[in-house]
Length: 426
Image 1 (cartoon, one colour):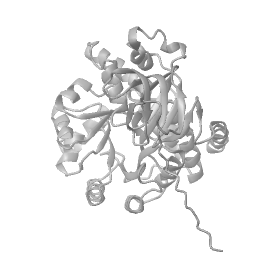
Image 2 (cartoon, one colour; image 1 turned 135 degrees about the vertical axis):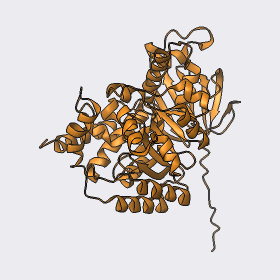
Image 3 (cartoon, one colour; image 1 turned 135 degrees about the horizontal axis):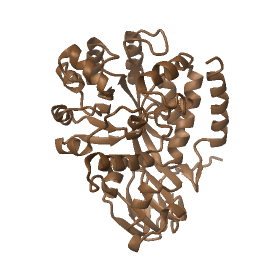
């Protein structure tokens, strides 16, 4: 007797209902009610009868877009709190580069997992990274459910190995061609270290690959006064002028730091739709002496983003805390308390996010709420709150204050063991 088989197709609707909650979208307006959030990053009012994965009581939650970290060296969490009190050049030469010669893929994997755990626990779902063994970093990020642009580092002298710059560039090019296991979330790019660490030929070859493949370019630009002075002495131009003169920029090039930039250079960045990444904590900790001028960049029409830099120079990957420092520093430097108000600061920190996170309104740091919750955003930026939930593409990365896409306790133990080996003879 022949039987008919019925195939049941289960569709992941990726739809969640959050009730009795407060939601803050990119428009900066506090909304109260019952909401649906979907895996594409949309939200709508809930009627209460939709098919959903789960219904969450949001009475103790503030729902917002997730944070976006536009400049990181994630695995440098291995170097957190190293070389405290050293100026930048000594910090690199005496503290960072000697131990980085011992880096292995295993160390990079452990450091990247620890970084991913910290990003998730602090409400960040995207990072633009530049560090060694990008294929390892990419696999970790894919597995943990985050989004990232992973840029393989390119220099003309070896920081950590004997790999030739041409070989490194070819390896990154192959990685870009192959793509990640989750191309919808993770992509590869080219991370030219700086104008002083890359020859003109290397920079131009990197740009050519970007133009051929559409990959992102990422580079440290005008981080220190010495870098700017040396570039001008060598080329007669400042770093961003120089990069423009050799046709380096491609659309959306990521320029980290931009602490010593002329208004002409700002216009150059705007003309290429480049992302200028403000990293205030790292620049202050290493006493760079100059930080990005947000008002001038904004006036020039530059697309500005926020980044923590690595945990070695920042001690943290918490982008919420970085937003606070950015707001305070810009107000202080320009003698203007109106710069980067809470709404503008939060938009800067979450720009382009299509993911959702929730924050704990029972956290005492979020009190008092104020009439209609008008104090909530200021409290979140300047006081802080525990991150309860993180949703990316409808998937749960963190729920009720517990990260689900990796085990934080296991990652912490791996990190401690790795650091013991990493520094064993240093």
